[in-house]
Image (cartoon, rainbow, N blue to C red; front, side, top):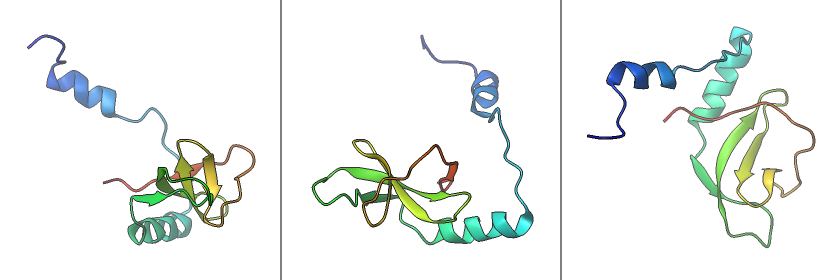
Length: 91
């Protein structure tokens, strides 16, 4: 089939180029938090109906939604300022 990469190349391409090292307790808290959230959620901005990806902010460990229209917003609809690191669940 044209356009398909050999399996070995696909595996190499899927390997992350960056690994974030966190203290074990923080990593475990983030993992527990992510295990309890739905993968998708409606954007919390009151006028938006887009579905977003649920994430957890690494520093504050707060949940947020990555919306295709509003970018990164807290669950109360406020925009997340700056460029925080965030984690998603591995489904």
